[in-house]
Image (cartoon, rainbow, N blue to C red; front, side, top):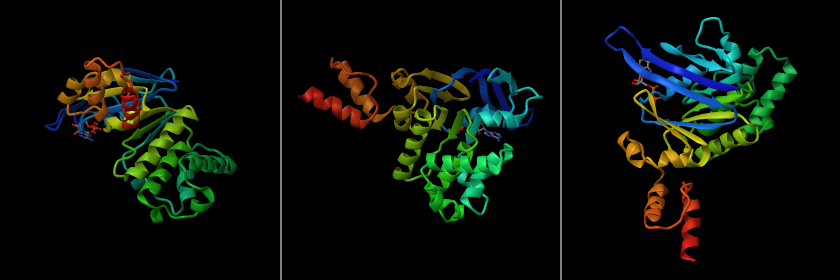
Length: 282
Ligand code: ADP
């Protein structure tokens, strides 16, 4: 299972005064099992890019090749693509519509043509993965739930399709810190325990530093940086020039390294930094 993006360009409303090139010659390969973060300022093209990966948008030019088949050409059945690549939109809870949590999460698996027992299994598993107790929540209306719980129901709906690749577009937007940490923890779990390939769109460097093995930085429709977190965060000036900041502790670690302390560059969280500082002070 791999995703190859070749020479992908996308132009919105071509030939009109509103014409906008949102993606400009993107070339990428994402291999099975990676945890990729896609980061960039608003308007840099992140959402446009991920919507190409499950066939929601068609390239203006270039191709998307999933598992060896080019999904940018007419014949491909998009329902087959969506079995492989699940996309959780921004604010996905706005798309909840059924009377109960169970019915909502069942919607996708039912469309896959599974029998009732298999659908029910998938709903239970998906609810467990997102941390919602099946018995307690299955008959509730999604509209009775808190913001964080609604978000989890919406994510469970995509997880229940059991895609190999799960794309989440700003899954923590608008949640309080507790809700945010819970969702991020569950995403990490999906990657670790279930081996899903994850593509996480985010604008929080702190969040992605903790989770991703690879960070893609977008700016004006192009990928301007692609590498491990430590490689990407080395480019502080470039990131700042496109309106992004590195995790706060990166500045501290950089200064300490400049002063000759031998500290790993792979330190992105305050907890890790504290450990290192305590060791230095000993
Ligand atoms: P991001 O997800 O990084 O915020 P988007 O992919 O949403 O970026 O947008 C990239 C560019 O394309 C922006 O300039 C945006 O205004 C434009 N754009 C996005 N969606 C549309 C659309 N449906 N019609 C026209 N322009 C769009």
